[in-house]
Image (cartoon, rainbow, N blue to C red):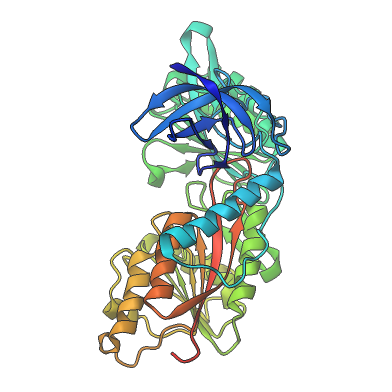
Length: 455
């Protein structure tokens, strides 16, 4: 560790929520805890030929956007929680940073500028997180259990008394959970508790490396009886092994009231972390897609039907496509449950190995909804571009006139946007950031692509 005596002026913030400055040699310095506009001194921990990385140790000019973190476990001190990196930045400024990241990525990586930048999608900044994975550690020397996120830049579990980003009723469970786990026979072999909340249920998935004795199961049942809405699941191995401790009770589900849709799910299924933002996001996506009753729509990477089922309330026909046959079957079940099976269908495809022929096999559609994982939809976008270049690859097939792309990675969105705009004949007519994870550097976004009228 070396002390930098010069004062550095922070120019911007990167995707890891670090301040970015240049030292007197012109070398880039990434600074934990520093905000744009501030003047700081830094302890440098890492040095490379073109950049350095360190932690702020002194400040003589403070940003007007700096705030006191809302959580007592946030910060740069030893033992601080590594779950949220941006709590020291005003929540509104966080959204502005994420919007800028999205725009910069679109231009620098994809050479795409949206014709219109929409207002970011925002929601509650505290108590928003309905999914979380808490590490569990029994500390023998202290005869106590820790439950929480990892410490900043560490494998140790932070000593968390509260968590401000989960709902209050979940935060209030942390200390009782610690006490209960400490009393269990298998406390050394319970490495994780995964939280998955629905509209009525707080599902807690306990990763149990060994079978639990009946005495430990009894303690879990007593805990659930004492805390309203808690439902225990056990996971002895991979996600597919998850099972309810005891049958009965309300099902785990969330609703999309605007569309009259209820979505059952398992606690290890992928669902959006932030239900408040998800509700708004689905509504905006459908408005941007502007589906008409006579239209056919394809929902690529459909998951459990988060967009497919709302689309089915608007369109003549919706095809949901996902990579897993098991997931496709679950989507069918959800469609039937909601009375939407008459105009929905689902197929399994390897969406990372799409070709023009496979694209054409699923038929033409008026519009697409694309919601890929972090890897993006490169193969899908490239197949669309290949058909534009050589229509004989898919005779008679028609490209969608509008695409709404929901992204959880600004870099892969920019890459795919570059293909759609620069090769496939689309315009990026609108885009906006989505603040799905307040106080973190995670950037989600939504973009609209229109096929030129002459195509």
